[in-house]
Every structure is written in C-alpha cells, then in structure tokens.
Length: 318
Figure 1: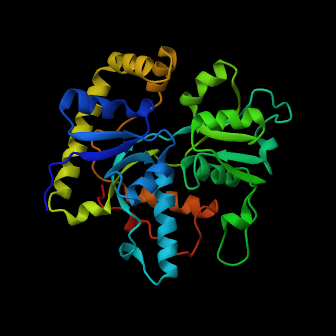
Figure 2: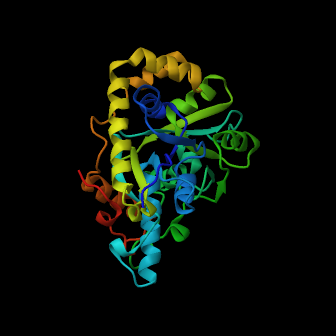
C-alpha cells in the first residue's frame, strides 16, 4: 500500500535540529516536522501509538526503549526480531558524544558538587528518556551502584537516588530544582547554559555520553507499506543534503540558532566547534549499539541476561 501523506518526523527543537530545518527549507523535504521538547522518551511513546513515523533522538533513549521491549518479550517467550518494540534504528544523525550538564537550583547551598547528589532526588523528563538513562550512567561512573546477586543489576534494586521525579519538560525541571521538588537534573550543556548565565539554575558538573549521541529510528508500521523503505530512503537523502548545507553555511546556521531557537550567538558558535554530523545518515554501526547495550546493562538500565539483542534493534546497518 502506497501513501502520499508526508512522513511525520518527531524531533527535539534544539540546535541539533538545524540540518533538519535546512533539509526542509532548501531541499524540499516532504515531511511534517513534529517537535518533542520533552525529548526522546516522549517520541518512543508516540512511535508506539502511531502518532509519528520517524524519530530523531538520543541513542540511549532508543536503545533503552528497545531493550526494555526485548526483556518483556523474553518473558513472553519471544526473542530478537520477533519482538516489535514499535521502531528500529535506521540512521545516524550525530557522530559526536553529547555533553550533559548537571544542574541544581540557584539557591541550593547544600549541593556542593556531583558527590552531593548520591541518594538525592533526580529530576527526569520521562522514564526511559535520556535524562533518566544518564542518571544511571552517572551513578555507574561514580561507583554509586550496588550489584545485585545473580544476573546483574536491576534499576529498582540498585538505584542510587532517593527518588526519581518525572517532570516532562525542561522548564519544569528548572522549576523543580529551585523549589526543592528535585535536587538535580541533566540536560544538554548548551541548552542549559543560558539559564546558568542568567542565574536561574546552577551548574555542578557534566557528563559525556560514551557513545555517538543521536540516531534516527523508523516505525515498524512502515514495514507493511510497499513504499515504506523508499520513503525512509528519501528522508535520509534529504537529511544528507541538509547536513552538507549546514556544514557549508555556518553563518546561516548561527543566525537560525540564535534567532529562532533559545541560544545566544556566542553559544551557537561555540556549539559548532563541538558537533559533527555524518556525511551519510543511512545506517547504524552495530558496534556502537552493542557498546551502548553493554554500558546500559552495567549501569542497571537494562538487565544482563535479560534477553537484550543489540543487532535486532537495527534495521539498516552501516
């Protein structure tokens, strides 16, 4: 069954979305772009609900979502490609790691640094989101996790935090750390920086993802349409053009980021020094996903021996 309805593409409306904007503005990308300011976890839900066809989001959010689905599938006697987590990895959007700023309230003198956060209340956008997953990666790096007996770590047994507070949006996260409803949260560095500069929140540290930071996924519902593969191919080709234009027109990128998005010109220029998009978005390196799964198992987000199959998450390999 073919369709003339544009693909519905979910994205996070931050500076990383600039090549996507250029793909539509300059190269005629035929897609309905749907912003998800609350992040990747919300897009996982939207993909499974049939509200979007494609998502551009954080690697850890996609892998955690698919891994959890596989763990549930194992309990139901399914394995690998038999498990439909609602989507599969089809492309790579950003090659560089993501720097997550660790933030607390402006007037929280009891929080002196990252070590003060153990046992505290972590604010997250959604369960399974990047902000949630990175809380466990931070805990693993700080050796705050306690292994459980048997097959490894389980987040409900190993959580180093007193509470996990789900707050949906960046604005509510900032509000929560100032009111004391949460002690800290993690969000991308340059998106957070404006609020450090204004004094609304205070930066206590940072952590980088141990993997390339953004991936592209497509709904498994597209598999049942004869033009599904062609339409995803077309989207990825337009993204390649948008990225090439972004790389060749940095001043236009700075102007767009500093006038249409929530960033200063200075921060936009600094971000450009840190980010690298791929020349070709098609496909995902299986080694990256295997490494991500290994770290998420170690961190207690996924369960060692729980049925997680990294290769089965990928529809298109590099």
